[in-house]
Image 1: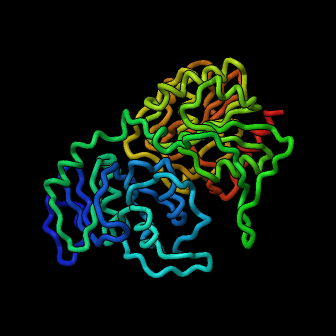
Image 2 (image 1 turned 45 degrees about the horizontal axis):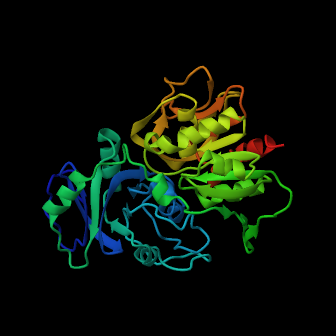
Length: 388
C-alpha cells in the first residue's frame, strides 16, 4: 500500500491518506482519525506499548510519530493513560490497520480517539522502509493528510512541508506549558483503584517548572515523598522564590532547548547561585546543562523508545530507559563544573549530568515511564532525599 522510495509515487487505489516529505517523497496509505492535514517533523518510536502515552506526551509537539511496532491501537484507549491534556504529537504512521480494541481497560477505539483529539493517522505504510529512511537521512519535515474522498493537492502539501521551518530554533515549551500555578493533587495509579491523591501534609515542597511536563513525573515526585506545585515555563526567579521551594524540578518538553533557554536559563542560574536543589528530566536536563555552561545540538535521528540502555558511570550499572528527544547535551562541551553521570550505550551521547559542588542533577531519559520497569525510580528518591 505504501511507497517510501519513489518521489511523487502514483496514488494507489483506495488511498485516503498521504505523507508528503519535504524532499518530495510521497508515501500513500489509508487515513484514520481526524480528517485534515498537519505539518511536523517525522520521527520513529520503537516502543511496543504505550501509544496513547506517546501521542499525549507534550514533548512530541510538532512531530509525526512513526511506530515501528506493527500493531498499534489493538488495546484501545482509556481516560487514565493520558500524559497531558495539552498538545502532543500531531499525527502518527502505522503499519497495520487499527483493529477493534481488545482490553478490559479500553474505553474506546484508537481511531475514534484520534479523531476526537484532532490528530491524523496513516495506516498501511511500510514503516520499516520509512524508519530506515530516517536513520540514513535524518528526520524530515513533512505533511500528513487524510481525506475520506482521497483527493489531495500534492504540490500544495509539498510546499507546506518545505516552508515549515522545522524544530531547530523553535520554542514550543511555552505553547504546551500551563498558564497558571497549580497545586498538584494526583499520585500513582493502582489496578482497580485508579490514581491516588497527594497528601497535603508537611512534605518537602517541590516547585516544578512546566516546559511540557508529563503528568506521571509529578505523580512520581509525590510517590517519592514530595508536595508539588507546578508553575508555567516562563515563571520568574522571584515568583519561584516566593513559593519557598525546598527544591525545583525542571520538566521535559518539546522544541529546541537553546530557544527555551533564552528565558529559562537565567532563572536556573539564579537557583544554582542560591544552592537550591534541582532535578531535570529531558528538556529540563538540557536547560540545566545550558545554565551550567554546556551546549546542546540537534540530533540526526533522535532517541525515542522504551528500550534504550544507559550506563551509569558511577558503578557501571546499566538501566533500561524510556527516551524521547531530538536534541542532546553535547558532551564535548561540558565545563569543569559539570560531571557526566550517564551515557547512552547506543551512541555514547550524554544521558546525565551533575553540577559539581551543587545539589543539582539531570537525566536525558524518562524515569517516570517505568522502563525496566523500575530501574530509574531511584532518581526521584535521590532528589527528594536532597530536600531535607
